[in-house]
Length: 330
Image (cartoon, rainbow, N blue to C red; front, top):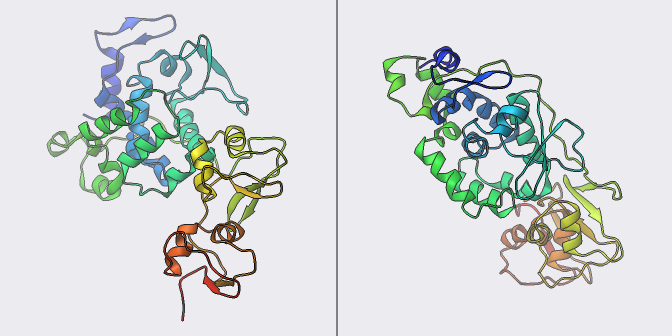
């Protein structure tokens, strides 16, 4: 079934009913995938969000494109208004009465904003360290980060992905598209995720993805390419997590800190994951240094310091020792 066929079916189906402004027929899950899978693939290439995850979320959040939020606000991901949202909005009852949701000019704007939202919110940063094809961990990570309150959210995403084999979009979609002929008999036998169907309209100009400082009272700086803030008097991991819309456990993880750790004024606090390496090859340990303080100083994951120096976790180093920050070249 080609995209043109789908559009004609949607337009002339006898199942249409009259709405206030237009006629509408319930879209099937297969039709939705066919219409929007190319958009999910483009966003995956641009931002690294797996196409399978994007499509599964859109299907679940928009009720296959049939929800009032999707039809009236072009919001296919259930993204609510935030303090930095300056665009149009749409109100509907959700967890609370008359909650504010983002409203878009087009479905494509919704897809772009979804990927942009995940890419620029620190609480989702750890997802981008996962393998793009590991849709199960992505689904579980989204739930763990608080994307949805539904306790079965991850399971439902995984089921959609596996039922329609959407994971194939993440693996080898370019070779697949070259090999499959649109509308052919062979095409009709393939899973929905593999069918060669074009997007309904051309993609508009892409937004450039940059880190966004979502607070006004902090200067966000960068060390080894990792954004961080300087702790103020009275700060705690919980307070900073709330300020940057992060789960508290993520702030502990980003800073290799124990749950009973306290924050001191002037301390570096990373709000995204540290990197695995740096430009400097080694460091000579100074008096008072710890593995955690060195990890913070260079913006390197502490587990990588242990691994590169063949040290057991929990081992501390002594002043004067050479600690390899990158692979040992000797």
